[in-house]
Length: 204
Image (tube, rainbow, N blue to C red; front, top):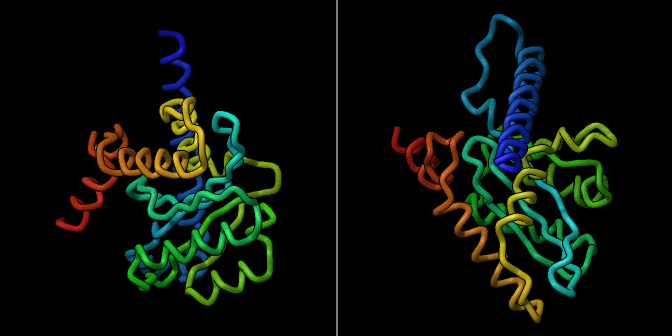
């Protein structure tokens, strides 16, 4: 019971952090367009990305993900045994495939200040795709709280103790993310899964 309460409190803290962050973005956007002008309808077109190092059984792997703020859906990911720049490039490439190559104007890609996201080539690619890059304050992981939360769920919920090869790990990660998107209901999404919530928004 105490463990559940601690997790619930942590989730609430993360949600408050994300809401504060979105309000901050709204204030910034209002300054750009002027107080007497309406904000664009896609002002919350915010996606988060991060690369995390994880030890699975005896293997060290690196998982890069992109998460949609509004639906909590993992819209792109790439698993690698290397921390080279390619992991970030492939994640963005997969994101563009998911979006059908269409990016809404003003869409913000938020990340930490890791070496992948401060690299000039990565920033050039992001700008070329029409995304606006925004990074966390240095040394403040709470700015990227939604991604930290997702990786916390992976750590707690994904069964990987018996994995013996990288290919097995890849299949396990793919299965978990599919379950997370399609079958894992979330209180903040009206008890719907991320995909169900997205479809509900599209049908509205």
